[in-house]
Image (cartoon, rainbow, N blue to C red; front, side, top):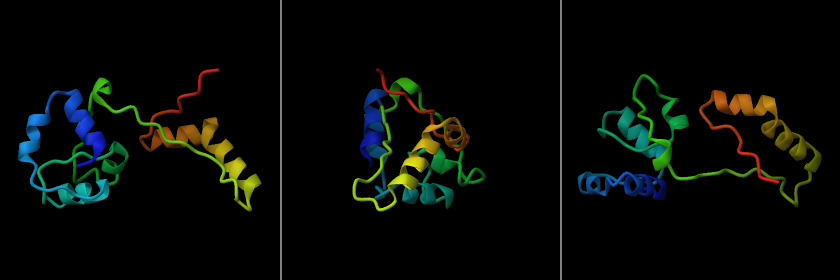
Length: 115
């Protein structure tokens, strides 16, 4: 069981459900596969992963107040031999087009750093 799942259960005061857990997979894709194949009744996965098998699973949104505050970073590797291309990629991901694509695929929009 992942740390994000445990955090959600604690935030929602639902840790009592842990006594019903019968399987602990090593990653979210394994959880999704078990649920999609009817080998599990339910599981915690990212909504972006659940979107890959919409006819097999029904996603239930977790209230924002219960969700962990997760942020993903993007950067250019210092030792890269393709720094210009990497900078262009980062710029595209952070720009309006890249953000529209990410939102379309279920990711939240970028939280801009405070000045």
